[in-house]
Image 1 (cartoon, rainbow, N blue to C red):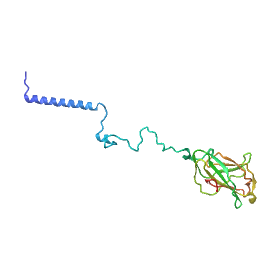
Image 2: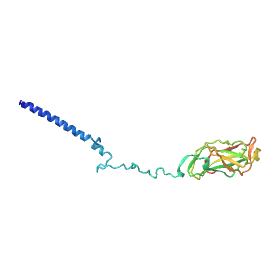
Image 3: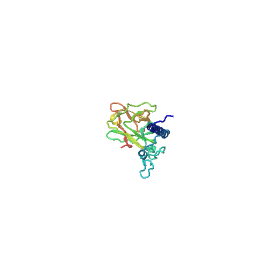
Image 4: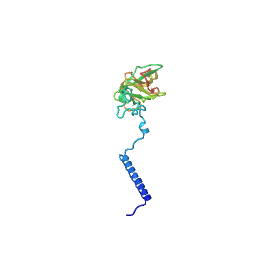
Length: 221
């Protein structure tokens, strides 16, 4: 049997020990990462936590995940919503009392919001006098100069426009007696019918023009 020199034996034992230590370290690392879940650092765990107890606490202002929205946000009633312009089906038309002056006959044409929502009107209404058969009498009214403004109508509120023409007895214009005044809300196509009870209106001649003003809040002067 060959005897190994003492220095070589110690060197071999040392090398074996280093290799074994490396193997054990590799096994330990494999065990620590085998779950596939990285462990957060201590600093990361304390972000958003109560510093006195180390217990995570939700933000005072952020709602819980899946919580119902606050009743005060977006719970406005239908009467407080504004959803664009008023449509013909949501309005009622009426003609107020005549306001004579300086040979003129002036009538407030009133549009009232009959819906359960808030809507708006802007500009000039359309108007046309028609007979019992629905035939228009005279030309369309002219728009009086003015500066239209958006009028917001909550349920039950009204806007009005002035309908004016020279008194036929003074102007000498050719006249007719309408059965109905058709009133078309701004930007709408379908008119509202109002029974006309105020007598004859000018429909021809040099002094037969009828004018209408822009809508404004209220029911008339």
